[in-house]
Image (cartoon, rainbow, N blue to C red):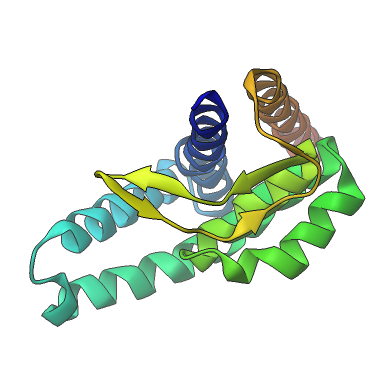
Length: 179
């Protein structure tokens, strides 16, 4: 129903904000110039493409791509979840991150989703119908079930996190000019 649509939409928005904005931005800052952003996006693309193949379970390339991207994404995942915690409900975000993130099927994305769900005060995860089959996933977050109002709150959370990142980038640039 509408709760499931809202829940999945919030989950996808949090993941997309990490994969397409915050992860890329942190790699851009940490590595010299655009090569960090390029490394992040290419690592993600290669991992996704090699995982989609039918022989991914028996393919050393897909395992290698997952491991390398896991190393590249280690810090950005935690930075994104931290930003969500800072601009949202900090205590709930940290609690959910510490206790629920490992329960998510993709443990790395569990960090972002648990932190985001706790910051929003919404329950994400649970059962969902994917490709005509019911899939049970761990419940993430504390509080009320997701609805349309929480979708607007998720947009606000991503915007506040973006403003926080821009403020940090501005301060880093100012410090490099002064120093």
